[in-house]
Image (tube, rainbow, N blue to C red):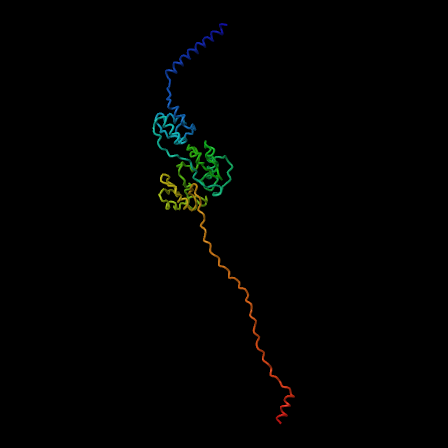
Length: 317
């Protein structure tokens, strides 16, 4: 019996000693957590997307609590989140313009042609390795929906071979921006309504051969912009969003419709004034012919009877 009791007692004593030591160590090396971090963390959306540049929401909460990051750092939470954090810290929320992702390409299946029938892995990165992608435009959307799969908020959908961002669902996490191998997804101001939806830097002729709705570098938009907020570089127009007033003149003037304006209704075609048709002359009713006057007949000289001539002769005698 002693053979079993002694080892059990020894193990129990050792365990008790270690428990006491751990208790003392926990008090000596205790790291006091800032309660502000927990409050800030509770105000964050908890997406852990990393769009802020910190390792998750907890990393950002620590940075904000220490004053190493502004209260409006979180792009997902936006102004609402910034206001809550500012109230916790007792500081000004500041102003941060909301940004959303935008796919700068309109080269769908109707506007571009297929160079080959891609049957590989459904990944834009893989597909773009083969001759720049299956579409005729090597600058545009590959169409394998990698950004759709990567978006944690279901804010991107595929329409006819091109990705489209659902503006109201976008949380500005920028995950899609890093996912796209063609770099055609950019962050734009939420209030902006006009975009040059083309990234093809080739000359006009090559652009037309590749896509039916690409920027051909004609600079018509640059010349017609009333605020000079359209730049032109590397055969491609760019909108300077800071000064753009969303007048949509550039979109209306663009000959290829490469500039897209939200909610812009096409102008109805001007109707030519109707030319009054010349009325055909009315057919006159046939006039009733007046009765022709008969020509007077020439009377034949009367021939007297021979008896009368004889009587006349006898009288003369």
